[in-house]
Amino acid sequence: MAQQGEVLEFEEYVRTRQDALLRSARRLVPDPVDAQDLLQTALVRTYGRWDGIADKRLADAYLRRVMINTRTEWWRARKLEEVPTEQLPDACVDDSTEQHADRALLMDVMKVLAPKQRSVVVLRHWEQMSTEETAAALGMSAGTVKSTLHRALARLREELEARDLDARALEHGERERCAA
Image (cartoon, rainbow, N blue to C red; front, side):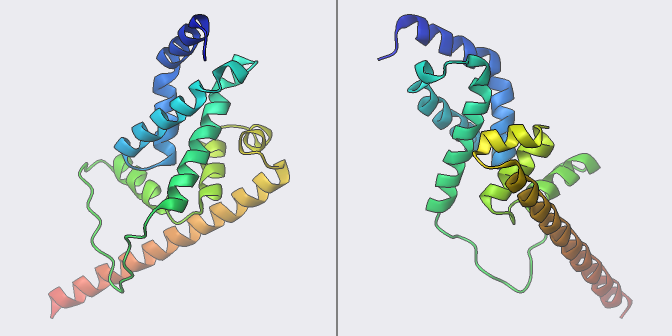
C-alpha cells in the first residue's frame, strides 16, 4: 500500500505532467477518447509501481513504456472491424486548413505500421528522443531501433505514394467523366 507521501508525490507528478503525457498518448492512438483512456490506464498501472521508480526523473519514460505496452495489448485484443474493399471511401476532413489535413493524413497513414514500428516513429520523431533513449524506453537495442525506424519510414513513404497515385487516378477519372 502506498504511503501518504508517495500518494501526494504521485498526484503532484500527474498534475504537472498530465498535458505532456496526454500528448504522448494522443500520438500513440488517433482517437482523443482512446488517448485519454490509454493515459488513465497507464497512470493506474504506474501508481501501483510508483514506489519502485527510484529515479522519478525517469517517470515520463516509464509511463510512456506503460502506454506503449497497453496500446499493444489493446491492438492484439482488438476485433477486426475492417472489411476489405476495392473502393476506398472518400476521406472526410472537418477542418479545411492544410496543417490539419496533413496531420489527419499522417495519423491515418500511421495505422499501416505495426505497433512496434509506430512506437519507434512516435518516440524518435514526435517525442524527439535519441536512438538510445528510444531503445531504452522500448527495451530493444539501438540497432533494432534504427532498422525498425528505417523499415517504418519506408513503409510510410510507400503508403503515401500509393495514396497519391490513387488520388490522381480518381481525379483523372472524375475529369474524364465530367468531360463526357
